[in-house]
Image (tube, rainbow, N blue to C red; front, side, top):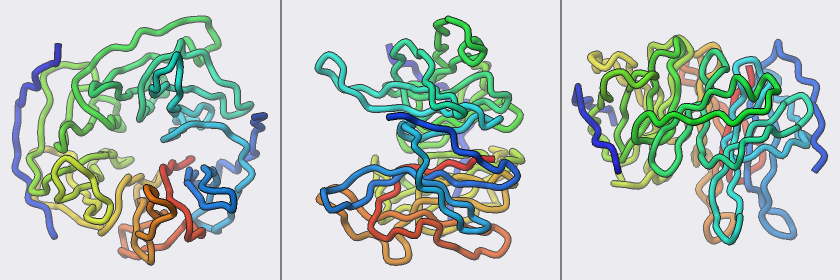
Length: 309
């Protein structure tokens, strides 16, 4: 039975216009890992590569078979992702956990789900599945034990992200942004936004702000009409709202000074094939508003980005 969302607080917020191998990373540097669809001679294909935003060094030979929306654990030792697979004649999304040191996948007992998010202490993963959000304690799996952790249903929603202090989770549901206690105490708190459809919330590293993607198109995030906004994580404080322009899928830098986004600005928006639009990765400096293009391939469509830190 679908749960009823109890709205404790509603605030109106007006917005302004194969054989994987380990890669030796220098953890003193920052890397952004990009998963993209490129146009090759034999047709479109997915590729993964990493960019150092400070030096623009590119690592293309990752040899990782991680899935969609990869998220590194806080200690960078594990990668959570999901993969769309056909099993017994039915397509579904399956969660994956991979050891970043050797490319070995853990046994997830064919657990379905997508959009994983690590808890700050690295012991749990929040994820979505069929319109609901679940919490999975992965401590025993990471310890190498033979176990089948049982997911705990938290609320209805998508795209969960933990607060830095692990006390709350921000998420979206039907184009609205909600906050909820990570242990399920109390009900969700909703932000009523001026924009029609807002999704993909991500908490800033210091916990004071949340970046979101918003579109004026109802029930659909169209990148042609989407902008990234920064709002306060305090639901009662709604005066300080900032728009950083066209884009989706905002990801904060580890120090909170920049945001990486997927955007069609700077010549994007063309089509690779009938259903794939050219989308690049851009880095926005929040102190200067300077925007730098990170993805150097102009005939690719970026699917997901992740910071290593």
